[in-house]
Length: 158
Image (cartoon, rainbow, N blue to C red; front, top):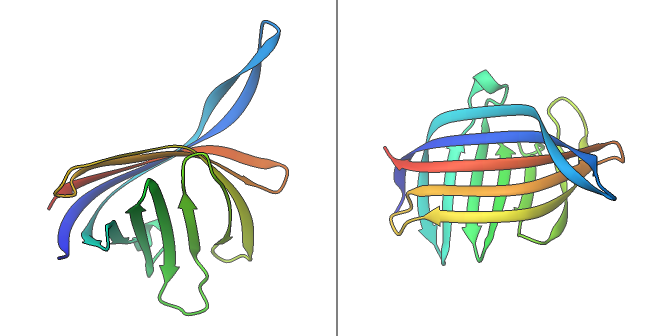
């Protein structure tokens, strides 16, 4: 059964720097960008998986884009797709300790291949589906662009 929910989605992007520390190096995260969305969505369960979906707003330049999170077996699948059949959108699965390669359609540009490595996934949703989900992952494309991302999804009753 689908139910309406309130969502708070925060995406934070960092640049990873290696800083000398004695005879070794340590990673330091430098904040690059952060975005928070408050929106309404739906949640439902099917075949031992939980789904959270919402429509992206025109204010973010993403009109007619639907985002779907699927939580199953210790992983999260994130799909973004438009109403247009030619819109490839994005489809990536984040599983801790796994490296995935996915294609991402950049608006007004061509699609690119992304290497995505998932560091950690925390699913703290209760039996009713309320709570938080957090995923820490690294995205790399081209040899010059690599960023660390933390995505936090808070699900509350509407």
